[in-house]
Length: 424
Image (tube, rainbow, N blue to C red; front, side, top):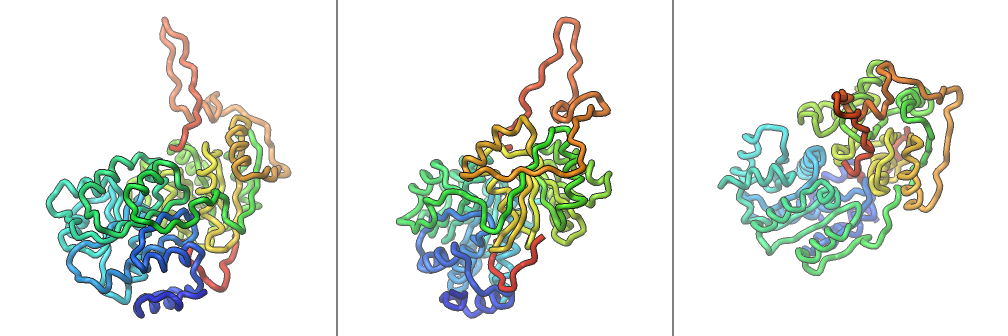
């Protein structure tokens, strides 16, 4: 099947050809016809499957045929990066039309976002918290809304956005088309969807989460305090091209990025404590190749979309199997190939065992030849895990030193093929 078989407007077909896409991905083949018919959707689609185009193409087609001057589509997304990415993709697809779109998220001034509401741009792509900030004023008019999209619905649930989403749903028109897209469909999302969707088309709802095809896995058992050194060793040899590295916390992301930078690796970091301008610059520099490594936390990772990203490294083992799927899904997108490396400390073996059970197989273990795996005391006399807990408390005369708590926190290069397919 090719995109030319979809009954889309000539402007959209021209944009698709200009962007070099020919064959739709499976989620696009299933979702676009149903969305063009005006049906509601409940779609479970893996990361990198092309779901952004799956909802943008039919919605843009509908928006072109209706009166302008009011906001008619709202897309809710969990992170700033994903909201900005969707808005950018809209502008690429709608380049041959006069349709408009604005991204609404925190970390930047509200003035330009307010002007977009007052102007009545055709589509608003928003993070729930900042959208509610605007909805306190009289200018955020969503009374003419005809299309609602919840993208990465499971991550919005994980991040605690469900109450905010329900507040938004209370004030928007009930008579609308609603599209749910999510990598997984946990019970709260299914329950919410059952209340909001009208006879929806269900896509891949029974699919078990699994890594994308074309992805190879490599596991490196290593003491926690030797992880930095091992990653540096791998970056100097086996791992080439652009590398996305995941850490458990913002503090560990900062320490790892500083370590790599001091050892000559062009590196940046992206996490919730970085300003929006810093996050935007880091992602742009990574995409352009100015930085070899981008260190990220799970919260900031949604929306990081880099074509032909060769490798993902789990510097810390994720606590949940689904998080492993999301992380490694940043590579091997759109039928390409990629590599996933995981550094597993002895205290992380239990969590990694849960990941392997979810995958249904034991992943291959590797050892870097010539690397010294012997644990070494830190210069401060504290292990890396102790440093990760922050400053050591000083004992008082009537109190023993506080014992550190478990530092585990729950949830917090291949060439592209000649024929391009959507990965967004």
